[in-house]
Each structure stands twice: as C-alpha cells, then as structure tokens.
Amino acid sequence: MNILYYGYGKHSQLISRCVHRVLKERNINEYGIVRCNWDRQSSLPLFRSLQDALKSAGWFDCAFIATPSNSHRAAFADCAANGIKYIYVEKPAVGIEDEWYRISASTTVNYLQVGYQFVYDQFILDLKKAFDSEMYGKMIAFNMNLCHGLAFKKEAAKCWRLSLEEEMNGVVYTQFSHLLSILLFVVNGRMPVGSISSIQRNSIETLEDTCSSAYLFDSGLVASLTSSWASPAHTSIKAIFNDAIWEYDLFNLSVASPRDTFDEKGRFKAPTAKIEEAKEMALFLSVKSFLETAYGKKRRMPEFNYSSKIVRLIKDIRNQKIID
Image (cartoon, rainbow, N blue to C red):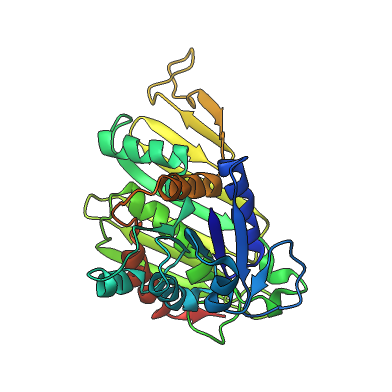
C-alpha cells in the first residue's frame, strides 16, 4: 500500500505512527511532500511536488493532507486530479465541500474524510447519544476549553499556525475549529440562532492567541467555547444535563449522577462520579476509520464532518472585534 503525506511535518509524523499501529505488519510504503523546511531529517523519501512523488512511487492508494490551512483545497484538488482514490484532509478543510461537488461528476475519488478527529472519540460519540436519547434528561449547558501556552514558546513567531500573514491561520482556524466540530456533531449540525464572540491578544508576541464564543440554540441550550495559546495546558468538555454532569479532559471521563442525592439532613449533595479512562486517543480512531475504508477499497459517501458550517461560524467570528 502506497501512502502519501501531503505536507510532511510534525502532524503527519503523528498520523504516520497511527498508520503503523492500524496496519501493523502489512506492507506499506510511505512518501512525503514538503514545500518548506526542505532540509528536515526524515526516514521517508521527500519530494517537492506530487508529480515528483508519483515518478518515484508510481501510484498512491491514499493520501493524508496536512498542509497549512489555506492550501487544503488546492492539495485536495491535486490529489484528486492525479487518481488518488482515498483522501484524508486535515481540518478546517476550507472549501473542500465546494471542491468535492465541483468534481463529483468526473472524479475517481472513492472516499474523502475531513479530519475533525474528536468526532471519532468514543466518549464524544457517547455524549452525542446522551444528547439524542435524553438518557440524562435535557442538556441545559455545554462548556468547552482547549488551551495551552504555544504563544509563549521561543519559536512561536515562526510557527505558521500563529501567523496572520496569510488567510486561514491563527487560533480560530487551527484550534478553535476543533471545538466547533464537537459542538455541531453533538447537536446534529443544528446552527445557533445567536452568538457573541471575541478574539484576544494576550501574549508577548501580540498574536491573536485566544478565541471565545457563546452560542444560543433554539432549544434554549447555551454553549460556551474558549480556545487559547496563552494559558496553561488545559482541556475540558463539560455538559450539564437535568440528571447528570458529564466531564471529559480527553483522558478521563467523569459522569456524576443522579441529581436527587441527599445527606442525612435531607440537604442536596454532589452525586457520586463514575470515572472511566479513555482507551484510545481521537487521532488514532480517526485515522483507523479512514484506513479501514481505504484498505478495504470501499466506496463511501464523503465525511465532511460539518466542515462548511464550521467555516461559516469561523467567518462570523473573524468579522467581530479583536480585543488587545
């Protein structure tokens, strides 16, 4: 199986580790495309273009696209035009749905998956089931935080994720989009009826490093989301239902229930929490889902994972005021 990493950097290296775990002893050949940092060390053969890589490999069974955000659509079009049948595009995959429908009548692509990895996480899948079935009652509040201190690292100014010199970079596109994907997945793609957002500059590099938004849905649910590169590392996903408090930090899940718990004097007390450890990380599960389709040579409908709706919400945020 010939596998291409279109944009071979740190994230592609993480994907490659997942590939080896999924495919194990199967015979695979890996190749990478690099447009910058040409002198990087790699055990993979690296090329500057897909055409050069094809001259060496002959063909590719599948491709993982992990280029900077503003080149996802062009990279996908390049792979599709060169006969790659299974394509995984990292988030936020701006314009991917439009490109898919533009070429759908003539394309030989059998499957496209947008890499919003957290929607493949078993506990996020369980949360969606709880939302749909109301097994804990109605969800009345939803809060998510995804934070770490990237903006304070010495090399931060050189990192493309933080750069605003080109469109589709910065914390909103590259990290906050993950939170939007979880939110839309859980609520089955329903769009909010109202929102308020802010983009802040908190770090010493005066970068746009923090994004916060609150969304109101027609059910009455309010969701609060914050993503930051200017804080200590912290991840929390918390849903409050009528009869449970559901909390997840991507490593451990806590579900506290039932609501009607009392002490010996008849006063409310916090319910006992059941703790469960995550068995696999979301990226591995996302890659595994993709490879099961690619290795089996199946033809499936594309999994856009609400990418176009996420881009619409991101554009709404970008149109709001930046707070220094």
